Length: 313
Ligand code: CP
Image (tube, rainbow, N blue to C red; front, side, top):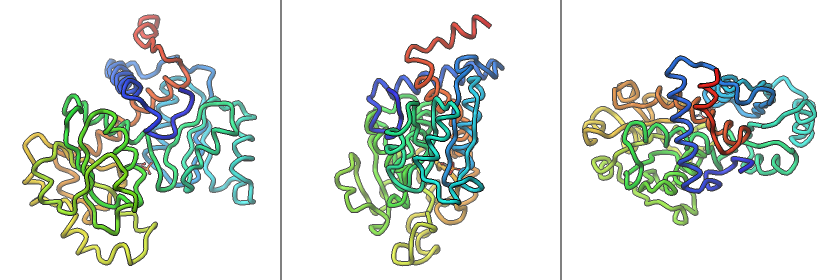
């Protein structure tokens, strides 16, 4: 595989290879081996047209831990403000020797366009309301570390599905990995075509919670909506927010996830976000391992030789 643009690009074997590679890389990091030489001489460009904290920083950390050179590009302060197009921006970065471009863009489909213009690999770090496949990989990695195999696991994804690239990528990847996904949202925050997605839909959070192994809360993306979608924070929180009372209805081993950034007090109460069941901070740490695995497999070859490299040090 040359690019990672959609979670649908990954077969079950591909997805398991990424998760197993991430596990191996996390194990190596636990042995205080902070840097591997795998991508020495390769250049990774982080091309971010939208704001990011976790994704941008973890891709940078992942590339550096694999010894790649990293160029960080932010549209703010660049010639994009003078009207330079995505294509010309990408070709400029390629002329500087990019082997891999990690792109975040507000336009759904921008990574597909980019993949036609550059010779290197393209990784989608979030495109509009479309997909965020490495978020889904790090989420699956986190679930597997906490719960074991995802086969038959019941994952409930709650909230603003309509604007969530995380939800779409998770539905696709978790389906590939054999999990049963249920979306819970107000009807106004579900995509029109949700009945074509490989998952179930419910409007009743309280009915679904006790049957869930994983509850993934989504950020309410107020910046992408108007009042017709989202009449009031209080009403939303009452019907779809995860508070301490609802947390108590989960089974003993169930975990609570959130991709971040969180709206504390809207979709998730602060005491839930900070509870031992919450994997929010683990997800961030696991993001580095998952993104290392993606870069490693796209740029370093499909036969990971991590153990050999470590042994050779
Ligand atoms: N989860 C996520 O994509 O976070 P950032 O927007 O901070 O990268």
